[in-house]
Image (cartoon, rainbow over all chains, first blue to last red; front, side, top):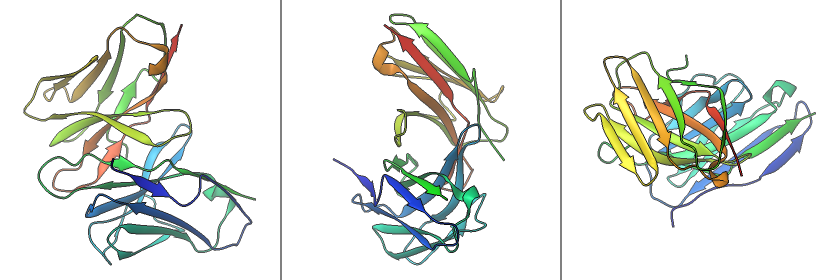
Length: 114
Length: 111
């Protein structure tokens, strides 16, 4: 059974803290993605990676960075958390083989920044 | 910018009825996908339709695609309370592995 896991379901942090959100997939997928989801705004792409040590900015990269040191793991970093980064964060992965770019999602991390 | 836009934003029906959700998009696509999200959870892939296909079925799901109108519809037949969820369409950005998601349709199926 294919699986994408995220390190925490719920997280509460203070303004200014450095926050790490971890995502692991067991499908040997090349592509990995980080989204944030906010009411009324849908899913917005923060960063994605198509290979180890490669990263590309999505639509809203400001205030975030990412790390992909191993194929199965993609980390989202909030260097200095702010209250406007309170959101649901979703990780996803997909294969680069063939034309089917279906994405597999993790359960999400609901982050609250106080 | 948002590529896909779902309509309606919310839909409330009774069990046994059919539910139809629509998606419009702006630029050319390779494929269009529909996902489902139960409250507070991750998204689950439902069905993918390629740009050269007009209709596709999967169980109680039927998806249509009209590339001339840049629109798609998702039909859920004989709905069940367990179908209560948000439904999102997603379009790929030609040549890339990324998807652009719409804002979703919230479906409520009452017993």
